[in-house]
Amino acid sequence: MGGVNHITEPTINTKQTAPDAYLARTAAIHAKLERLQQLADDHFGRDPDAINWGHVGDLGRVESGLDELLAIFDGDGE
Image: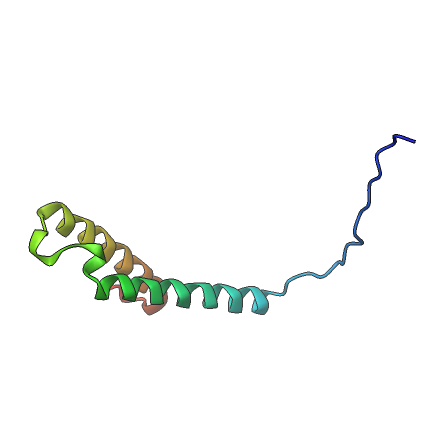
């Protein structure tokens, strides 16, 4: 009896609600903000004595991205 035995788990039809998804994404954003703060506290992994203009440009792009994100929620963006 060399047949293949397929066992399938019963599926549960639970739909995620918008508030549940919102809270999950909020938690993920908080975790990423915490990690970003840790990186910032450590000079983003850079030796402060070895900073070059490329590093400054990288932070400029990050700052610009953060301004865009703030504009979504503040309506201000500055």
